[in-house]
Structure formats: C-alpha cells, structure tokens
Image 1 (cartoon, rainbow, N blue to C red):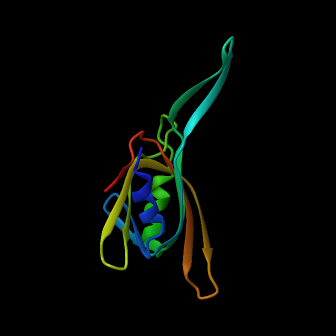
Image 2: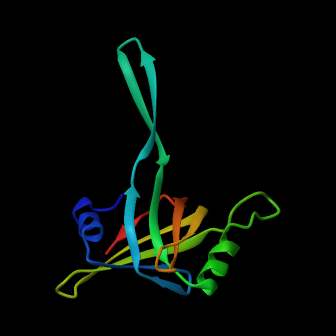
Length: 139
C-alpha cells in the first residue's frame, strides 16, 4: 500500500500529468483515487472474522486531449482473444508550487472513458482505470 501522506500531496497538487506507457497526457484534472481491499465477513463461534483480498484500487480523472491521445486510449479498451483488457503502466506526476514532484505509479486497465466537448470546443475525457496490480508506489 502507498503512503497516505504522499498520496495527499498528489491529490492536493496544483499541476498533474498522466503518463500512459510512452504517451504523456498533460492537464489532468479532477483526480479521484480509491485505495481499498475486498472484505469478507465470516461468522464464527467467537464473533466475526474478517478476511481481506487483493487490492480493490482504481482512479478516475478528466483529461484534456487531442485526437492522437483519443486514438491511443481507444486501443487500450480492446479486448484480447482471452477476454482481457490491455494491462498498462500508469503514472500520475504531481508538481507542487515549489517544483517538487511526487509520482503515483501502478499497473492497470482502462475500463472505460467518456468523451465530451466543452463550450470552448475543448475535448475532455473522463477515464476509469482499474488498478490490477497489487503494488502501488508513490515516490
């Protein structure tokens, strides 16, 4: 699991970028990180036992993009012959006002995205990334 204090620095950052593989998406906004574990409750004679599974982690955000980025994102939603999505490394880089950077890194799949045009004719994409790896790093 990641350090909560470092995650707070990322969420509260003034400048965020998203790096997907070799492509970089600038102007990431509205970041929402969910870090958790699947929980199962099992009744026992001594009370309730809790069993925790793998990470139930995801993030959503809004990206301001152009056609090449839309095409690149679209390829990540293609289903393979075995019925799986393309696993990709995702990095969220946060720069604070003093220039220090923190990086959130995880492996995941782009489950879905929504595209819309704003009143200023800017394309915005809301993405949902399911983190599939059980390791999240913040450095």
